Image 1: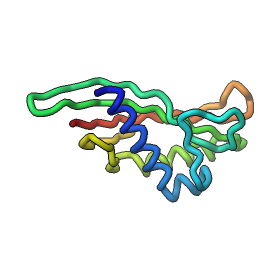
Image 2: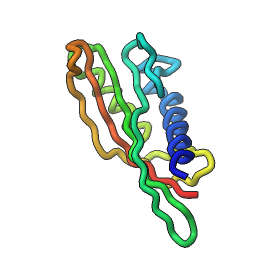
Image 3: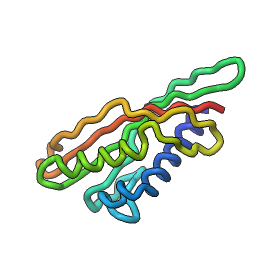
Length: 136
């Protein structure tokens, strides 16, 4: 169930962010949201990163508790743009419903965020983690 659920959640996040007007206003339309970052990406963009899963089951159903990591990349001088994108993502995902194909959605909740200067000296890197709970 883990791999199937992780992919379904990733697709749901991709669809939600790709359809969000505030996110698209900041990263472009069509939205630059990647599972695999191109060799020469146009900044700013969002990368769907790691996903960590814990399965929990009851007598009635199997459930999945996931931490999904999103990466925001900006070349704006300063952290303003990265923080604005992180804010738009937060508004689109935190405590908002997701359509997770083949699973019943329970919760999407922000758990962590940070913006820092990348060692390349040019980029700002934002990291946000969301807890997503689903069950069959």
